[in-house]
Structure formats: C-alpha cells, structure tokens
Length: 386
Image 1 (spheres, helix red, strand yellow):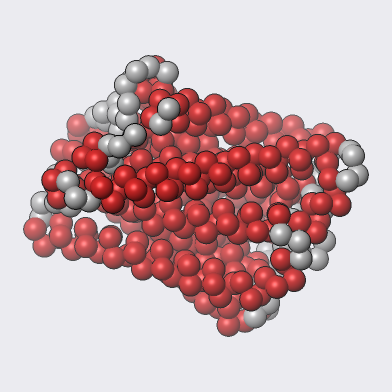
Image 2 (cartoon, one colour):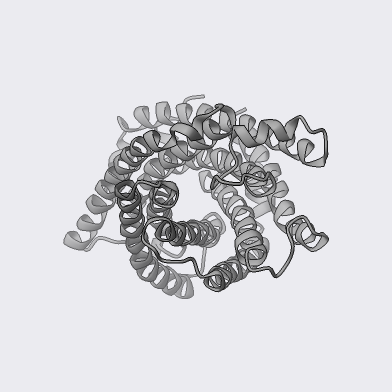
C-alpha cells in the first residue's frame, strides 16, 4: 500500500509501538529470571531457566516468542514507514507540513529509530550466547547510535522551534491537544538510551558519557515539558479538545516512564563508578510519584476519549487516524514502569517479597494493560496495513 501525500510521520508510531511491545515482554525476563552478577537477564541466564521445566520456564518461553514476534513487526513496519516517508518528502503536503505546527511530528522518526537500537539491544541480550562478556566493547557503538539519533532529533527540533520564534506563526487554535509533546517523547527516549551504558558500564569514561548524555536530554525534556504542557492545557481549556487528537492526553505516560527509568539508571550508574550509594527510599518515592501521575493521566485521558466516542470511532469503527497508534505507547509504558515500581520501588525496599502472592497480585493490573495494548495494536494494524 502506497500513501504518498496521505502519509503522516505519525505513522511511525506503529513501528514504535511494535518495538515497545517487544521490549515490554522482556520485562518478564528482566525481573523474574534470576541474573546474579549481571544488571539484566541475558541468554546465559535465560537458556538454563528454559530447561528446568517449571512455571518460570513457561513464562520465559512465552516472553521470548512475543519478543521475536513484535521485534519482527517493528522492523517490518519501520521499513514500510521509511519507504513511505521517502515518497512523501517529494509531495506538496510535505512542504505544507514543514511550515505548520505539524512539523514537530517529524520527531517521530528519531524517536522510532532510537527504539530500534533498544530492540536490537534486547534481541542481542536474550538470543546471543556470551554477549555479556563483550558488552563493554558494544557500549561505545550504542553511544554513537544514540548520538546520531540525538543529533537528528535536535536538528529537527531547532529548525522547527527557531522558525516559530522568528516568524511567530504558531497556530494556537490548532494546539488544543498535547501532540506537540512528541518532541519531549523523542528526547526522553534518547535520554533513557544514553542512561543504559551510563548505568551498566564499568568503564568510567563510558559511564560518564552515558550519564552526561542522559542528563542533557533529560534536562531538555523537563524544560520542554513545563512549556508545552502549560501551553497545551491553556489551549484545551479555551478551545476544547478534538476527538481525533484526544489520545495525545496519554503521551505524558510514556514520557514519565522514560524519564523515570532514566532517573533509576543514572542513580545506579553513579553508584557503580562515582561512589554515590543508591538510596533505596528515593527509588520508592520516585517510582511511586511516576506511577501516580500515570494513573491520573490514564484515567483522565480514558474518560475524555470515552465521552468523545474515540474508541468506537477510530479503533472499533471505520474511521482512520494515524494518531491512533499513540494509544500503544502509553499501554507499553505503563506496564514497563509498573514492573520497575514493583521491583525497584517495593521489592528492593523489602515492602513485599519477590515471587510472593502480593508480588504477583500487584503485577495483574499491569499485565492486563499490556494485554489490552496488544489487542489494540492488532486492531489498528489490521485497519491500516491489511
């Protein structure tokens, strides 16, 4: 299927959602498979677990199947979107986009390609034997990858931001939503990418570069979050929100997840090489605040979308909107950070015991959200692609 001028950069969110779902199934391996001496579950821990034939073997096999399936869909949709975008760039619609509020939607491209690096990292960790033994040699390449996506993200953003500041042509009447926050989403994704080698490397130079990159993009995200959240809500209070743009209310959920994980990773990175001992209580308060805000925005967004009939119209109905794929990222993000909350916020502080009944009961709402997200993903994929 070729869209040409009907294409929207927001279509990249389909590939982003598939990549996010692949990573979300890795969370079961990350937190349920024991991996003493390593910061994450890798092939060397997962494979022996598969052979044990217990309930965890079943969970591990189940997770691996979905990691592969959604990684495949991520790359398939990434290739499709890239081809479509290259054709779209030759159209007049693209020129109009470059001179409108919607130019910011180009930030979905570095956002999605940053997710691609994360998906590759997960695939390598769980399927390549002995990879963790040479991971220190891979971290510099990961940093280069994040620098490249960071460079293009900054380039797109500064072109857009400088244009509207110079020309003063920002259309506030069309800003009655939070779609402008896609740039914050992209920068937060780049920040969390940098934070990975910043947290896990035992080489202080790599550690420092990763943490600095994470702090740079995290600071930019927080600055823009204040500006764009204020402007977005002001315009929504004045003009209301359109049904089609209402999923943008949920964009704050993945942003909070990414900034939260960045904060957790930075604290562990500083513990490794900078002598700053991780404060367990701060992890409880950080994860609790983020989960609380996610629940607040989740309930608010759902109530508004439900009243506007969004799900009946754009998910279950015949109407199409590329913004619909923005529904996938919040579901993924809520599940992922839920696992961080349970494990780093509660279990790490001794509030609940790992593998206890309370542990699994607390996982249920996050698993349910992941299940609903998978259902929505395939509904939207069928509607848009075949």
